[in-house]
Image (cartoon, rainbow, N blue to C red):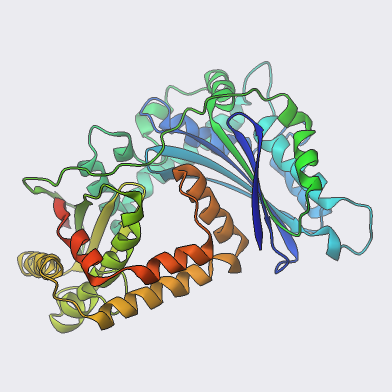
Length: 423
């Protein structure tokens, strides 16, 4: 596996991952822009509207037909919140030219042309997105926003994030707000789209059996040549050395639920990007694995939770503890959760705990190049943080973490927000 990157224009990069493990090529285009309340909903509608049609494929039916003709290629799109940025994502997966029944089709070039056209040359009518497409996608997004309460665990974590970052971009809901949908129409959305395309960070990934010819293919693509240099309008997610909270923010919300959802948001105060490897180990011991303190002590021994885990959000240096509990066990569960945090601070974990954590994390790292989309996500994360490390070096950094390193993290962890969803 070989990874390379090429700057096509200022703010626009091509990333190639040459890996002969796969019979397919996966092409991805990512548009990264900073999160704002003004534009978060627009970006969600744009992501959905672009898949509806392009200049030469004006309908979804036509796009599907083209995919079928390309030996059953698959096209997908989505939207992520990554730190203080929104990332509009577009994927096209197709068979590699090496495995085609006939030669000379140049499937990779054709696939790139199709995907770049969908993203960069959308179907329009009179300098406007087609109103029918926009209205239909607005209704779809409205249903998704209103349906976010259906998944109580996801909803509770989103609410905890919202409370922790009330006045900051990261607190915004990923796909926006129903009240903002009303202001969007085909014309003003297209005007904003043109602004977005001229200012956002653009990253194009090609994974599979690729050679250096891919650089000239992409550079010469008509949809790329018309793009301008830009200073990308996005935020480098490097929030370090944040102050630990002096007082816990406690938020309780009532809803018709049979199981309480307890989310504890922790701030991790570190002053060096390299300490994130230590934080990964800390999180694994605290609640990130079946051997963790949360799982073993809160769930298995005390039987105070159906679910007890934690996750580390490296873009914002947060750890979120997630518990599904009997509503009447709130005080007991919270007390025991706080004890696990205090025990970590006091060094009450063993070398075996550390070894188990390392083995689990390294096992996950080893699977990065088993899936093309996982590979792409790994390298996109490095691009967005400007923190580049090979997979081998990543594992070596994990191996080097000591108990003292983890203790240093534990002493710089504090509870910011406690969110409890009950009946």
